[in-house]
Image (cartoon, rainbow, N blue to C red; front, top):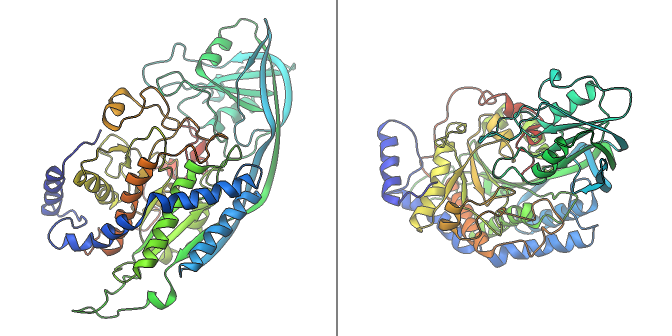
Length: 529
């Protein structure tokens, strides 16, 4: 947990500078670097963000209750955002792409038919096939009871599965270690007709689990809680019936909304001096993004109307400031098909030429900023908490956020770059990244409740990926604190004199294989934002 104070942060910055590690300025002339950030933080208000959240709610209400990519609610959301940005003076690009669309047509069901009769709470995995399968349950390499730390490898190896008999058979696998898609592919290859994936069982990994498989599969795939899954696994001779009705379209069209500075501004200030406007570093574009789509199950007001509404409010307030102090260009991005596997941001990064990719100075990502039982999570750019560090410069971005919270006496704590939001394609390409997160399906600890308030033992957002993620599912306090920090960081990165290092290695060679895997969100962590 990060509970540092401003003095400690300043010492760390000075140490980094003396060691030759570049950092954003925080003192001396650095206070000038913070001026735009401070003005933006004051200008961005909860009322401004809620104005956009209400618009997103109205759009969902008029469009089957959701704003999912590939459906009319997303199209209307994209129109709303594009119109607001154009009115604010930005040059707006609507970048279309196709993706494999999927949704439930009817709620899935899972019932034990023998011995006895039990109806289970369940949910489909994204890209599950349709089907009605009644057959015997075969537990697959389960770890019961679970270990203290996640370790289950259930279904991760083809050898975990005995060949299925000719009669319909349902594989029961446990969350853990590898992509959901790998577990399902192994089950299908072994001849199973349906797959049930239940949660692993450690604290925070007990509730009903679902996720994305990354690409369509041919069999029904549904989830269970740990309690239900372990009970089913230990029921001798268990028989179940699984039903799913899904819609898949491999070539559904959607779009990203990209907004750049007005052309008349991008070339200004070719010289610098007293009374002159700062010269824009055209090869140091700051991309500030959030995903615009919801899941099909609900309107997605916290996930991610809170993030996209905040980014839109920052863009409008920056326009009101007149772009007068920028040292770097800004590009606001509203990603489509994030809930299908980060597909919009992945398409954007893949579409860039080497020169265009090299011109991106940093990516800021804001995915869920209003969780009702929130924590002030900051992406752990330096990997100091044990996760993988981001590309060079990510540590300095993290420090901008933590320094901001420190100066206001607000605690924050790091969250791993786990590849589950739209920074993923950027860090895979070696681009520095950072951002904020208020929490999703994870459970608040007693220690967190003591620091941030809220309720220990409950999810940060109990309506995550559900129909109840509506206007009532927002914390105004979270929006205020994290929204101000998002605005401050945006202004600071756009005006800082020092910036961070520009190494000579080609973009796209940072990180590990998981960052290049198209199925990030089907990893054992499950979906998040």
